[in-house]
Length: 240
Image (cartoon, rainbow, N blue to C red; front, side, top):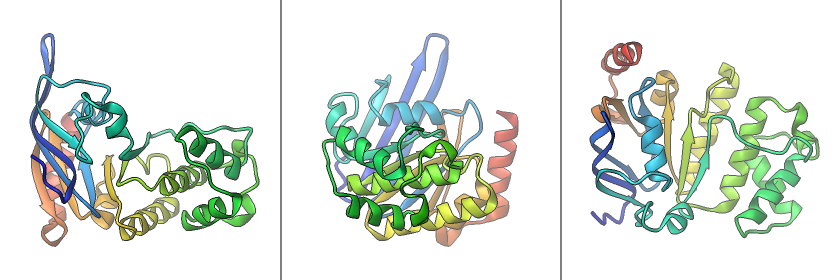
């Protein structure tokens, strides 16, 4: 189970509630320095998978390691290995971009000066003119960049992203995918759950399609077949 090159290692994971099985023998591995896109429609088990990885839910059976730690046994140590970006990032409207990053880092026990924060915001693609503006007027794409800058400065092995391009226009989505490539270039891994098949094909090193609580189709970048991926995902997502 302890594979040194895997920042996420899920083996035979099952989660059941009274009268309902949500995950059934899920196997999922994310290699260090790679981007994995997990595709799935509503009700396929994506949210439950995230809850297990974050240590919020103990599974019925199976083994899970995040950065070498079991999330429900040592949640603080497992969460220290990752930065989680939900679909709607919770930031502070009355604070500027720099102030948001500074405050969120302080909550994680990390402090950096304004110059270092500016470097992270620049790396995340946020224009310098916006650094000292309050977030009340920011678009979703701009907010995502602030959140990514915060994640970059935490210097964790894994970014866990929930529908990161939901609500973004095509240009902002393309910018975000470019940012993920820079994250990978720094040696971090990304696991994103998404409905965005085309975006996943553009940026992911590996794609898995989740249905009925397990991976039903998986492919590496060299073997991506858009027609096959669409057939697996579109039919199942439509039926979900």
